[in-house]
Length: 173
Image (cartoon, rainbow, N blue to C red):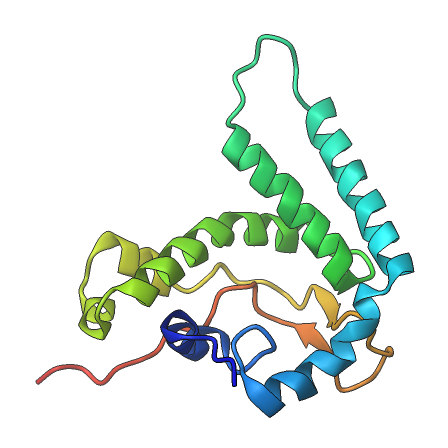
């Protein structure tokens, strides 16, 4: 049987037992409800959305202005993913928080996958950024798994913004 491997084992405490981090029968059970999101007609809509996002980013550039292409491409990709993932309009504060948090979560997650567990407890800047609570966000959107029926168990309301909850450890004595 195919296994996800060590990196995904280390990601599981941060991201839970979702489709991307599980194996075997549990993975198959979690994957089935997502399959409608990958039908040909849906993929065409996703491609149109990605093109609109790319056009919007390119239109925001002005001649002679220096552009951080990595940030602009991340902004475009995250906006497209948000448009494909969330039902309804996602409010601007939530979108800004996703854009602010993503590099922090990505960097902290990547480091945690390759460093020994003891590193997580060190008071270094990376860990401080990663475990800092996100700014307060009001419930801002209804998140729906692709293909989920409105009101189904696969639809949830987001009341915190995109950051995994830090693992609290007892204070050392």
